[in-house]
Structure formats: structure tokens, C-alpha cells
Length: 105
Image (cartoon, rainbow, N blue to C red; front, side, top):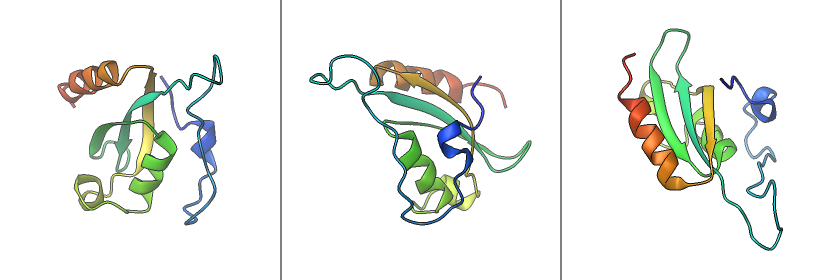
């Protein structure tokens, strides 16, 4: 299980803070390998959960923390990353997200 990733641990909420997570981690630099993330956000301990999928985990978590997108996470103040999984296939990531959304909470 992954808890708050190291690259977000120091995130203080400063707008426009330069943060990135590379899409190329291994392999031939000529062939960019994309990664996809299924993640769980929480509002607080034992609070509301949100499960999502993205191709840029840092950008997406910042969008949740800064309330840049109106919707479920905005309305329920869900902005704490508590878990994530990494995939090389968007189809596998979406499949995993679908399974996770069927879990009993």
C-alpha cells in the first residue's frame, strides 16, 4: 500500500509551485512510456472517499487541493491523497478503478 507519496509530502498548497512527476521513468527516451494512476482521496480519517484515475497524479492532486474543479471533491472537501497504484495501460487503470469503486466502504 502506498501512503502519501514522497513527492507530495511537502506540498504546502502554494499556488503555481513548480512540481512535476515525469511520464518517462524507464526505457528508451525516444519511446516515451506513459503511466496512469488510480488514486484514493479522503476528506479526513473515516470520512468521505473519492476514487479516480489520471495520467498525472501530481497535477490532479493539486487540482483537488486547490479546489480548481467544481464537483464531488470540491463539495465534500476531499483532498487528501491516501493511496495510489501505477499502471502502464489506461485500460487496466480504468478496470482497476471500476473494481475499487464497487468496494464496500
